[in-house]
Amino acid sequence: MDFSKYFWQGEKVRLRPLKIEDAEQSYMDSLDTPSRQFLQLGTELPTTIDTQKEILSKYINCKDVDGTMILAIENLEGVKVGAISLHSQNLKNGIFSMGLGISSPYRKQGYGEEAARILMRYCFFERRFQKCNSACVADNEASIGFHKKLGFIEEGRRRSNFFFNGQYHDEVLFGLIKKEFEEKEKE
Image (cartoon, rainbow, N blue to C red; front, top):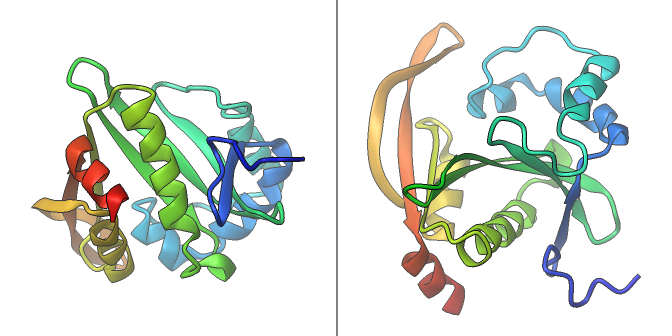
C-alpha cells in the first residue's frame, strides 16, 4: 500500500484505529508499573488480556467515548509501538489535551514525538483548536524533555497532586498554542 500522501503517517510512524488484537500489547504495557505511575494511572489492579479487549472495544475504529479518542501508534513496519489519545476537548474555547504512551522496547526512537506532531496537526489545522494543554508528573524527566522538545511552555505546577509509591508527587502543567506549534514546525 502507498501511504506516501497519507495525513496520518510521518517518517517513522503511522496512527491508526485501535483493534481488538492490540489487547495483548496493552496487557504487556500494564506490567510496566513505574511507567503506568508516571502516566498518572497509579498502581493498577492486575488485568488480563480479556479485560484489555473489553476496554479497547469501546475505542475501536476511532470511537469518541465521552470526549476521548485513542489511536494506535505503529512504526512503518506495522508494529504497534504505543498509543495516543485526544481528550478534554473544549470546543467553546478551542482547547484539547493529549496523552501518549510508548511501549518500553520502542522508547527514545522518536515515535512519540512524531505521533504527537501528527495529532496536533490534526487538532490545530483540521479541527480548529487553538491550544493544547498537557501535564506530567514532576519526577518524569523524560516527559518534561519531550514537552519542551515539542515547544510546550511550562505554565504551572499542582503541588502534591498524585499519590503513588507512598509519596505525593507534583504535576507540571504545559501549554502550546497553535502559533507556537506553527513556528516550531518551520524549524
